[in-house]
Length: 308
Ligand code: BEZ
Ligand code: FE
Image (tube, rainbow, N blue to C red; front, side, top):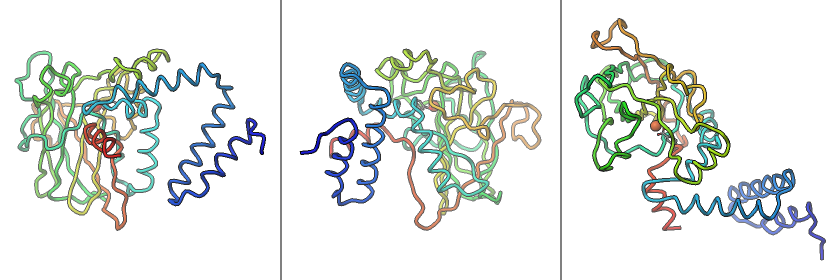
């Protein structure tokens, strides 16, 4: 009988798991066990802290519903979602293609169609809402237009709320689907979004507060672009003048995705509006390319959890 001291326990666990038939599962769990044990040794984890951790994870699970994914939020605020995104990009993004960003929890499948030049805002704009134009092209990584590209856009309103967070979560606003023209051009009117706080009323919000963090995401517009023969692009454009653009709680911002609205841009289809010009560059769909979004509709995750 081996003495399972603070180091031998790790080897004993790895030995028992060594026969895992699926090699990828074996590699992932082996590595997780090594790092988990190293972590416990490094911080000298006490029984009270271990139990507090178990209670925290239990609360995270209990906060998950078909409309809310507290585990993804935990992954987001710990930077794990960003890390997985960056590694996925490094493996699959063509040189010159647009960088990706987090899908987030507010994506809705099949948003309403918006004609080119139409508006994402259903309600009329008033003094508090700054109407802007977003325009540009969808091209391949080398800058050649991609005909037939479809763009889904979604964002908060001028108050910093998604439609899903309103009194009637079935109401649709500030989102839409555009179909680019034959040269890959698009233009759409919208209201300048406002930055917002990630949900702070659950266990992840409590953790963020305990850490003295602000919990804010800078103002952004989410964009999902798809076209036959190209990889789906999930990204977002972030506004440079938002006070949290350098300190996003979920680490979604990349320099190449930061924009500002300006008047007098050449070839803006609506010269009367402040405009953001952005060209989205797609990666080709290589044979055997990984699919995958860093994010999913929470109801799909709940379904997958139920079916084991
Ligand atoms: C979002 O961009 O919608 C989002 C991303 C991560 C956590 C919360 C919100
Ligand atoms: Fe968002």
